[in-house]
Amino acid sequence: MNVHSVPSLDCSSLAPYRTLRYPEDHRRQNMVVAEGEKVVRRLVESELEIISLLLTREWFEMYQPLLERRKKTSFDVFLAEKNLLNTIVGFNLHQGIMALAKIPQTFSLEEITKQTPPPFLFVALDGIANAENMGVIVRNCVAFGVDCILVGETSCSPYLRRAVRNSMGTIFKMRVVHSHNLTSDLQFLSNTFQTNVIAAHPQKDSIRLHKNLEGLNTCIVFGSEGDGISKNVLDICNEKIVIPMMNETDSLNVASAVAVILWEIRQTFETK
Picture 1 (cartoon, rainbow, N blue to C red):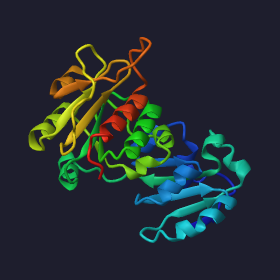
Picture 2: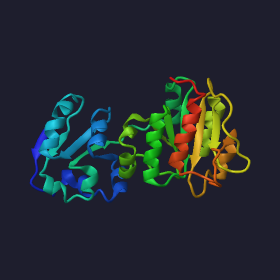
Picture 3: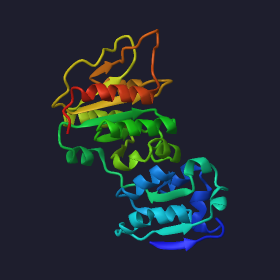
Picture 4: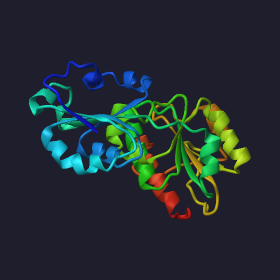
């Protein structure tokens, strides 16, 4: 690693840190931003290619042994005073420690599926536009052993800054497929890999998840809170399931629904 002390944030290498308000710029540059101690630690411990870190000397002294164990690629470490880092938006979130990394290589759905021993458990996302929800969904998927997240073309990237932060860095452990046509990809899973495609769809014709999924390739589809799952995607699904609720509650936040359904599935799905 190459360590530099910086008296200001004006150099071009630090531009991505100064533009935390514009996460789409980072996505276009194939960059992911990690903020805060826990998220940065999970990034450093991951296999992602680190571009640089920006942190105080105190954080560097704590992280130096961990950083020195990364020998695959060279990266820059920028040391700055706390009052300087405080000028970047959201100091209470980044805590004076941030990092940039390359978004991992994107694999095709076919490649991921062939690499995953059956029975696999996938989650597909249709119309999830809120980055905070996306991050919590990722965290839930990692917690409950999902093998891959299939992000539909109408969903935001799980590598957006707010999504990464709300995932608490668990995104660095999750395989992601960015779908350009979710309907076609779900049909491919169903036809080629005999996948049971299930819609989490709180409507009158939905049923409670009841059958034993052990031994079955499974993909659970979640839609947006406002519009739910789009009709084209819904038509691909083998069945629709609902979470039984009380007190005339008609739905949960989508991230909460993901946690409940994945927990329920794990009661019947073979633990790997």
